[in-house]
Length: 157
Image (cartoon, rainbow, N blue to C red):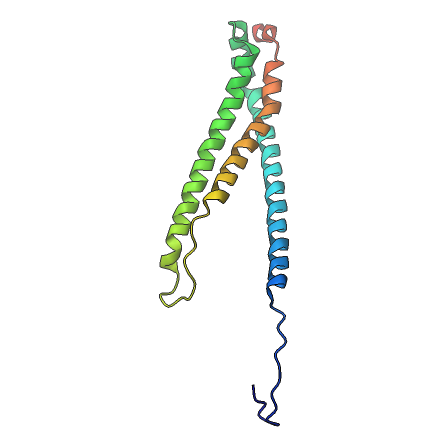
């Protein structure tokens, strides 16, 4: 390029090379991963808390089932199953909402935008759905253990 004052040609120093971008993207991916793990941990703790409170409220029902012959395994399956079913429903709803939002992006972009509309991240959606289900499973273990430790004789009080 020609400098207006002297007519000399100057060189451009480029700091936006591919290595810099890869490093920034790596840090962003690490940050998003750590944030996701923390959010899933908080979700699991919340599910444990709600599950334990639910077991307290349903203890009479569960004790009557045990007194009528339900096995500890069937009680555990009931508690874990309800939590995992809720996780499946939430995961399905989240994937559906994200698909609709990604599908709507081209209509939100200006007509002369040089950017291509994004493709739906199927792999990320499957990983998120699986993480939701695993979080539901982990969050239901403590309530299930509490439920199977209830003594049927307490139902007679």
